[in-house]
Image 1 (tube, rainbow, N blue to C red):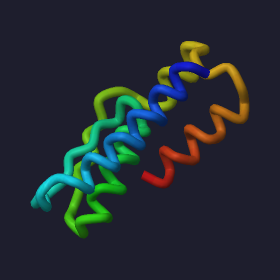
Image 2 (image 1 turned 135 degrees about the horizontal axis):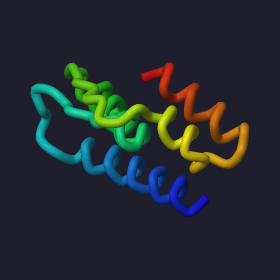
Image 3 (image 1 turned 60 degrees about the horizontal axis):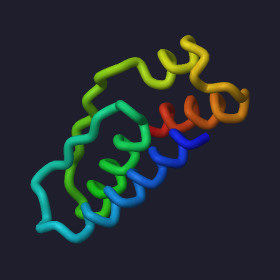
Length: 85
């Protein structure tokens, strides 16, 4: 739960910071964790610029397979986020 909270807090911070910078030509987002990519997508949408989704790990498949995502609800939410990206 702490890790999920940290990921969400970082994503919120990244979106706020991304809206305060000078308009970029493109936004680069990484897949680890998916919330970082979500933040990149939001910033790109804010600026109406393209974004690149760099897949570094198989998220959320890898943490799920390792047992790091303990609840079915959390797994469902991660896979839903993956599909939206």
